[in-house]
Image 1 (cartoon, rainbow, N blue to C red):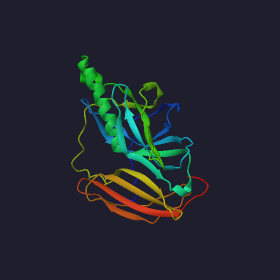
Image 2 (tube, rainbow, N blue to C red; image 1 turned 45 degrees about the horizontal axis):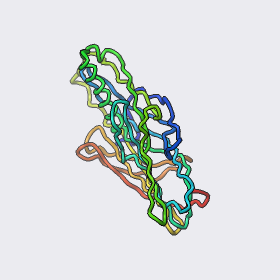
Image 3 (tube, rainbow, N blue to C red; image 1 turned 90 degrees about the vertical axis):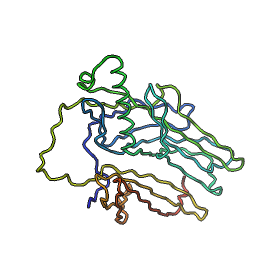
Image 4 (tube, one colour; image 1 turned 180 degrees about the horizontal axis):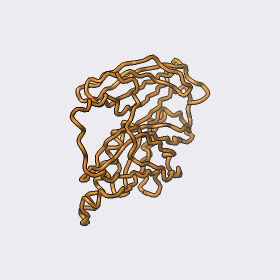
Length: 284
């Protein structure tokens, strides 16, 4: 039984924060990007994903003062390269609801979001392979393409929406069109390590491990003065039927009870737990 749900593979993907988007006319923007362990590698003819790790992003969420009370808001991540179109990731969404009695007229928060490592590394792998195909079309052969490390850039921005009580008005922001405005990271599409050598048949099979885990949170303020927080998680195991144990831990080191989950026939699993707490009257 594996007891570490955040185990990830060795990192071969080099990711560096390049710039931070100016807020200007946008209510939300990416401020920092925290890549965890992920990997892109080539086999001499294409790029492949060999590791997983959650991508964590901090975003500034600012909705200006309204004459009416804010009812709810939500934000989610979008990605693109300079040559490609936006791809939206609703699974990264974070949302918040307020009761009318809370009288929330403005919001100014730093909100953490995350993107499943397999989702991000698959996107990065596909963009690396797009780059390789462009090189082939220009006359470069595979031997030359995969003999060196090559770097591409991926840009990030936020989709955001909020609504207010009273007239049902909904405001929305969309990613900017200017590539220069985006927060970006460098992705190194790794060179080929050369011919692969098969493992000797007498070697024992690898110990089953958790390849990646992803957690999202939804918080709702209730009329009775309490908040309800729902934690929804998924994980990817190295083999079907693998059973894991895990717990939650907050910023103060307080740990939850230990829970268990089992991977399905595809090697994936899901879990969900709900917690309640008194509403904090000092702020949203």
